[in-house]
Amino acid sequence: MYDMPQIRLQDLLSNLDNTEIQEIWEVSYITITSSTAKPHYVAILADATSFCTCMNIINQGMPCRHQYRILLQSDKAVFHMGFIHTRWFESMPSETSRYATIAQGNKTYSIKLLHYIDQIRTGNVYTSTIKKTADKRIEFGSAMSMAKTSVQIAVTEGATGELTGLLTQFIMKY
Image (cartoon, rainbow, N blue to C red; front, top):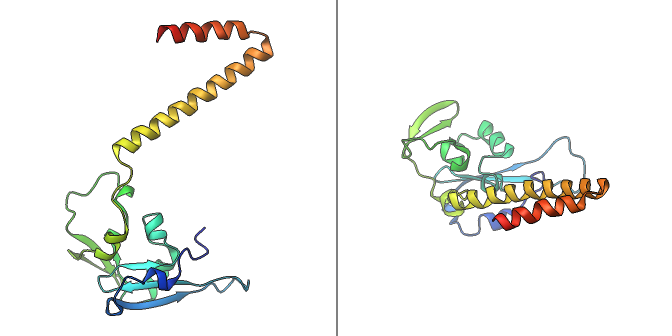
């Protein structure tokens, strides 16, 4: 899915002032010979946020291979822990105002906030309410699978009356 750009570069940068853009890189594949293959673009912004036209950092919540490629090439590209969405952390670090940044192989700690990515990226969407709903759907799917298998066995074995009796008792109980 992320082999093709998901957004045009001009749309990705449409709400930004040109002074906020530090660099724009084109990432192409050497081995792809198709005439329909399109390059990806990685933009590095003033606050160290980097966006790629594959939109992996937004859709998946982590940097893509194109951004990692630029990390190796650009002296303005920085790996910031804030690039990784909070949904990927098992538990949130106690210190959230300081992030580790890695630039040109040097690790430093920064309080630099990524306000561009924070504007686009939503919070942790896997809330307790959504988790409960998802858990109920999983339970429903498991129960329906069991019911379907039970009906198939009852029909094959000629025991539909017995299954109907068990289900009737269960329904009357609850």
